[in-house]
Image 1 (cartoon, rainbow, N blue to C red):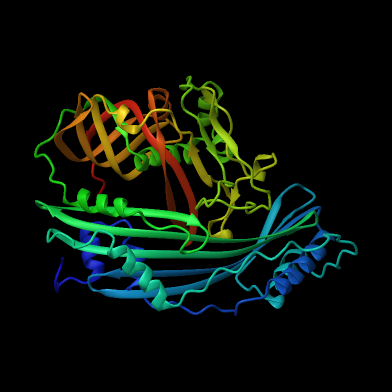
Image 2: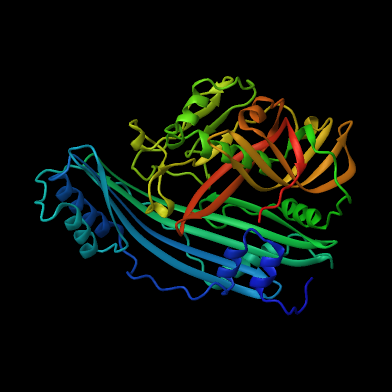
Length: 486
């Protein structure tokens, strides 16, 4: 383990290139002071009263109205060799969306989840509009259950439990950290036709390991995410031990020939490919681009063994929800089925019923986006897919160009396979490149074991949550040494 070092945490994580460095820095108190929330926590009943009154006033002036409100808290605890910390922050917001008689939608957003703040937002949209006389929404929905409250000590204990999962660490591990991240979002959606409420408590647990391999750092992570209680699930011990083993793995010097090969993608890489492809091509926003629309009108055939759906109703899914940010109830959407593109993710701007209109942090600009992508499992164990070629492991980013369909998937390492067994040669930092539909179209094996991966990134400073459940996939594509971006 790393002893006292002259580097700060920020410098150390920057040097290692740790993907979760910003979250660790924030939790460990290195990300600057957290400003207190501008308004206190609110009782659900009074919030609903304010929102219903806003809808009634707006409905008197506009033919279509939707009001979305959120009270969101984030709590993150982290422990590393240099210490421990817990950070907390809260964010309130209200989005009032109206459709004018011309068909154009307008929005007013406020961070004031108060009676006065909502009333001011209504006046900004509709002026002194009278209250609509009749707005029959019936009885309010039942209150969602209140999650168990955990103090700082309890959260640090959860992190310590993760650090103990793989026992005494090798002296070659230069940095280790454990993280528990909880996003608790209380969301209200009200229109003249519905009154809905949900509580989404998204939990991520993570172990990070870093070791030096010659002159380059190797950073690995084990991560699990779900919606529910902090103690509903845990990081498996074997996943943390595997992360440590991968960080210590010695790489084969030199490089292999860049060429097309049979490859087996581990679940994180398969998830990365499917996630990037769905967001780039299989949304109503992407389909508005002429070049994407042409590709989707006559896509090449896909293998019947490959089936992909987006299912926010999957139990405990990290990216799941009961209704989207336009108030549409959750339902599965088939994206790839029966050897063809079967559907797309759409918001109401596409002119349909929507169902995947999502706002970063529930207050950002609405966009069609996946929730919980699921790749249907196959019949064979993943070991049966490893006949020849390369086993690619450790996702380090994927990109798909919507215009050309070209995909580039970064992998931390490639293990050479012969006769169904690894040869012992392991190459660091490789890329799988090719046309997305070609990579999916050449899938010749789907494993039966699946792994669910949580994703949390940000857009405009607001979080976006989603998840992907994927097995090992065998396909064919061009493999090369990874191109480093400046």
